[in-house]
Each structure stands twice: as structure tokens, then as C-alpha cells.
Length: 155
Image 1: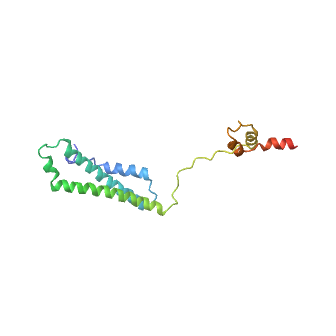
Image 2 (image 1 turned 90 degrees about the vertical axis):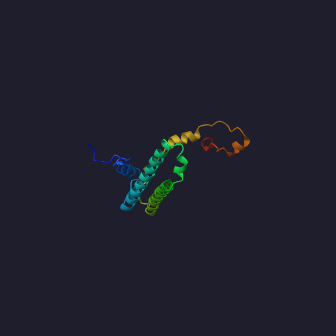
Image 3 (image 1 turned 180 degrees about the horizontal axis):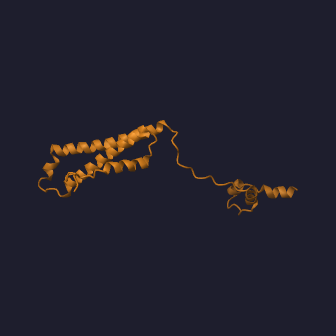
């Protein structure tokens, strides 16, 4: 039998899982970035908590009392809590971005390999191959001349 109170609406390991997921996603490189990621996890937990509370309020609302419920001080407090959670999340993400901008020496994502250069003979053969004639006189003037054929005629 669990010694956890029955009124908990979140699992005790939720924050740990959020934190681990965010560390895997952001990959903090120092203690300051790790602290920012911790703050993101706490703010995310608050956002999720507010969403669950809101969902429970409106899942089976009392029809006559819904209007009065929305005007209570408790609901106004809930709305402030929800807004604060959103602001905390955005602020924590901004702090992490700012920290990352301060040290551009973090390892970048691997770049795709550059295409290998073609052998010179293949490139020269492709340049010497006849191409279809240009369709307009302007395109004919802009088209490169086949200098290989002209060079052969001079010899």
C-alpha cells in the first residue's frame, strides 16, 4: 500500500521525468545552463498542473453555479497562477538562449559531408559534350562557347 496522499493529481516522478527529457533535449553544457533547464522543468510542471486544474473545473461543471464559480477570488487566483507559470516558462527559455549566445564555442551539429570533387577528365568531357541549341537568340548569346572544339580546329 502506498503512503502517498490520495489527493495528489500528479505523480511524484513527473518533475524528474520532465527534467530528464529537457536535459536530453537542450543538452546543457555548464551549471548555469543546467539551472536554466531546471527552471524550465519547474515552469512546465506548473503549466501542466494549471491545465489539469482547469480541466477538472470544466469537465463536469455545475450548470447553475458555473457563472458564480468564474467570478470567485479562487478562480481569479488560478488565472494569475496560470499566467505566472507561462511567464516563468518563457523567461527560463530566454535565459537559456541568452546563456547559449554568450558562449558560441558549444559544439555545433555535425555538418553533412561535402560532395567529392569530380575527376578533371569527367568534368572536361561534360563541358565538351554538345548541348541542345538555345531556344532564343538571347539565350544563345548568354550560352558558353564550346572552346574545346575551337581549340581542336586551331591545331
